[in-house]
Image 1 (cartoon, one colour):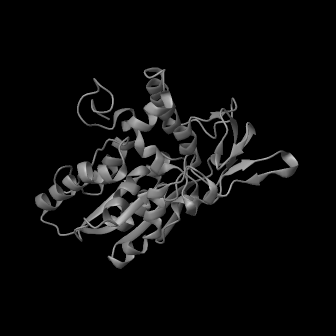
Image 2 (cartoon, rainbow, N blue to C red; image 1 turned 120 degrees about the vertical axis):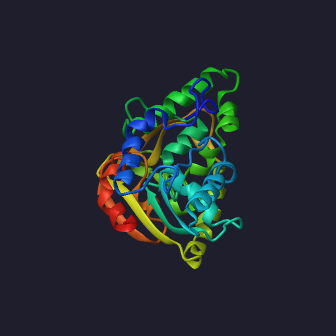
Image 3 (cartoon, helix red, strand yellow; image 1 turned 30 degrees about the horizontal axis):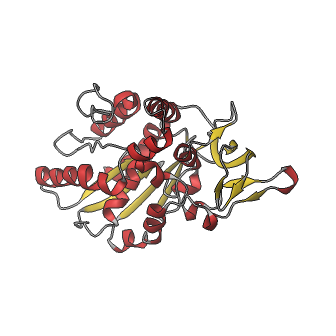
Length: 297
């Protein structure tokens, strides 16, 4: 968080999420890492497109880390969207052969249906949010304020100010996730027919083998046993040409095979050393201590 995102919030920090991230940084320090010596934080404007985040925020921190430590290769420890930022770098033509391993915690490698709802502005039936947590509360609050400040065209404001949302909707590897039809004739909307597709993630996942060809070790950590949106079912409205006709109302179809925000299957789209941790999207950070110690010490 910073004044770049919300005016008046000051220099870069974790903001309200610091209640989770600051203990995580402390955990890494307890392992022997020292902030600004061999431990560096890449804050970023999560509203921007991921390739722009890579160029503006991640690469300068990587260059600083190599310069300060003298190390040729670094470890990238990434949570949630941060894992996609890391992949956007190591899979790009700008990659400088400087990453030894990727540790991705709760990263939506195939996207998440909740972001489709945020991007399209679709309405959920009351009390059908999959789980209320700091991520959904912060997202709903930010988007509500953004729409309030742009009453004439709130959705256009979301698309203009928050373009990375489009890069977080479900991708082809997620599978079909919109359900339409009445109870005895429900069917999925095929991803290939949808107007809103995740071109960024589709391309990234199609080229994921380059991670392994470049000799980068991958660890994937996913949360489980928290009610998570798996599908969206239309309960009011209709679809044509792969998109809703006007106003529509949706109900979530939930699963416990996720962390409250990201399904396990989305995290595990990549190959690597895979781990399941019981906990929600934020609890996984500290509950992964034993895995992190085995990878970093």
